Image: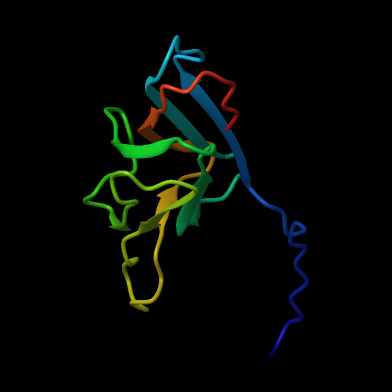
Amino acid sequence: TNQPCDQSLPPPSDPFVISKSASPTSLPSGGTVTYTVTVTNGSDYDASLDSIRDTLPAGVTYQGLALGSDVTAANSSVLPSIGASGTIVWQAQPGVPPPASAKHWFIAAHTSLTLVYQAAVPNTAGTYTN
């Protein structure tokens, strides 16, 4: 016989908390800054992320991934070009199993994915906020 099945599911929510830091936080005149973007999955469920977008301040240019980054050339299908400015995008590799259109970085429950990259800051004095 068929038995009714009643199940309560939690309401949908965004499981991600995103934080960003810069090191150093101040440069005397130009130089290189290292940005660390941390995406934390605070939920009780595994999740995935297909892309990360960041907008650099005017005049600041992308210089590449840095040590300690969980996002790498090997697990990404798209990386920003060296010298890119404005909005820059990292795209995950296609997920397994198919569909081939599925792309993701896996973030287990209560863990984080860290993107660490460097950017060049111009020699023009001023405040650059990102």
